[in-house]
Structure formats: structure tokens, C-alpha cells
Amino acid sequence: MALLALYYAFIYFVPYSEGVRSGELIKVSNKGVIIKTWEGEISQGISGAQIFSFSVLDKDRDVIEKLKEYQGEYVKVDYTERFATFFWLGDSKYFVTDVQKESSPHFRN
Image (cartoon, rainbow, N blue to C red):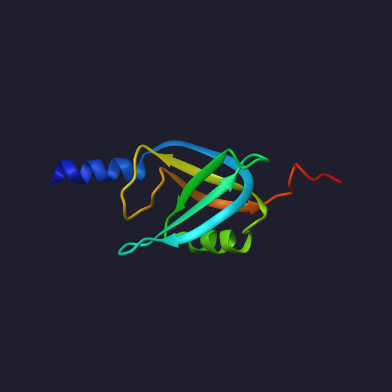
């Protein structure tokens, strides 16, 4: 049991990497049948060929609300990558911790 708790603590609290990505926010959804998780996608290319899929923890309500507001806009997100995930946290190893609306580099004045 202690080994299981140690494994969970390692996965949950020790980040593999942290970073920033930007692109057009193309999806935000609360999905799942029994356990719902917040999932999203950012298109990082003009053709939409490069998709960054991410999850958001339920406790980050302000991030979820901003993502819903910025749907279809160009955004910059801060994220933490974990070694793995658990099904009740999200589908992705990438967890967005902050989001900001940005000007698109594709449409400059």
C-alpha cells in the first residue's frame, strides 16, 4: 500500500517538464461517462496538422472558464508535463495551469 501511495505521489507531484505553448484553441470539453475530465486541443499550425492535446484539473476553475471564453482564439498556455496520468485526472500527460489570450502571428497589422 505504501508503494502505491509513493507511486501516486510521484506521478502527481513530480513534473517531468514545464513549458509554454501557443496556438488556436480549437477544443475544450468536459468528457467522460462516470468520471468527467476537462480536455482541450490547440492547433499549432496553419493547416491544423500539429495538435497539442491537454487536460485541466477540476481544481483549476479559473483556467477552465478562460478556456471556454477564449474558444476559437489564439492563446498561450503554461503547462506541466507529468510522467504519466491517472484516468480520473485526465487523458493527457500535459496539464494546463494558465492561459492568456494572444495576438495571432498569422494576422499582423
